[in-house]
Amino acid sequence: MFHRPLKLAAAIAVSLLALTACAQGSATTTGGNATTAASAAPVTVTYMNFGANGGHEKDLDAISAAFTKAHPNITVKIETVPYADYFTKLQTAVAAGTAADAFELNSENFVSYSSNGALAEIAGAPTASYKPSLLQAFAKDGKQYGLPESFSDVVLFYNADLFKAAGVATPTKDWTWADEQAAAAKLTDKSKKVWGDYQPISFYEFYKALAQTGGQFLSPDGKKVAFNSPEGVKAANWIIGKPGKTMPTQADGVGTPDFDTKLFSDGKLAMWHSGIWMFDGLQKAAFNWDIVVEPGDTTKASAMFANAAVVNAKAKNAEAAQKWVAFLTSSDEMVQTRLASSWELPPIADTAKVSAYLTKGKPTNRQAVFDSLDKTVLPPVIASEQEMQDAVTKELTSAAAGRKTVDQALKDAETAVNALLK
Image 1 (cartoon, rainbow, N blue to C red):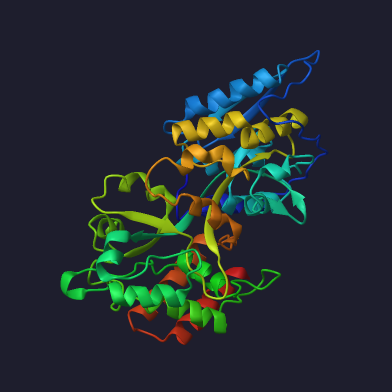
Image 2: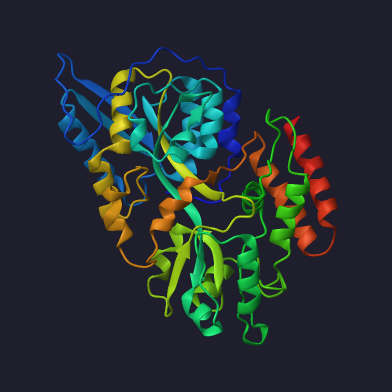
């Protein structure tokens, strides 16, 4: 399951552990039709995860059973842990040398675990099976240390009825910020409390907008801030320039939990930057709505959140574990199980295999979910992650409220984040 934004303080601390990787075997065949000869001695692979918790335990068991059918000598022993407890338990197990042969990571925590030698390189994996951006999210220094297991991303929702009533053309995948801004101005009707646009003022929106202008959040070596730049100023102005003009202000309710969801659900919001996890809650909306890939400035850059299956560098059954994570993330059985149970989205490149999802219902343009993966941006990750996010959000909020200029806000955010990087 995806939890956005994520708090990483406990898990990031694992980067301080001194772990040494050991030699690994290779992942082999992954499809549902693959078979392997049974070895003389049966092997058990242990796997710890959080994604199946809360209703998908049987789905993961079904994938495991299909894997054992394809690999009769390998049994998978699964441990599912609630998300709230998962990373504390994983950190303790890795430090003690008792972690499972394979386990699940989100993209944010992958950065720490792949940097400290806790993960085995996955050689010979079926890399062509995955969307390139998803695969790249779990690579480091040209080596693959995780295989994408599932993903979610952010798109632009729009109320087609409001566009039609205002005589404004609906968004397309080619839209830029300028197109969005022009449409939002025409669609805003403050007398009716109808707003043209909604984009949260937060770290998560800033790092994405920064990428859409061609800017960088951190320097290439990751040792200092790079966002206090002309691109950073442009990105900050893009976000904080909306409240009171085409987007509601703090006084109107921004900051109230789920305020944006209610605004869109009530038909009072024309465009909304939000995640695809909102689809189910909008199925009964009393208006026509759809989605497109988010507009960009000089380039596209969609926010992507992903989970991966990784192999423990100290796995007792490394070769079998690599076969398991390859099957778990790319097999036809996995795709069918996830789609049938609405259990997040499979990371595969072949969209023909997800045709059932593309025609599942609103939104009509579900293809945009996969098109958004063509150009993505991951959140920057540092040891003091939550503190960095809070510092950036605080300064952007101050600028939006008029308490300081954008230039000063970025300068103050730069000072705060650079201090965290030391």
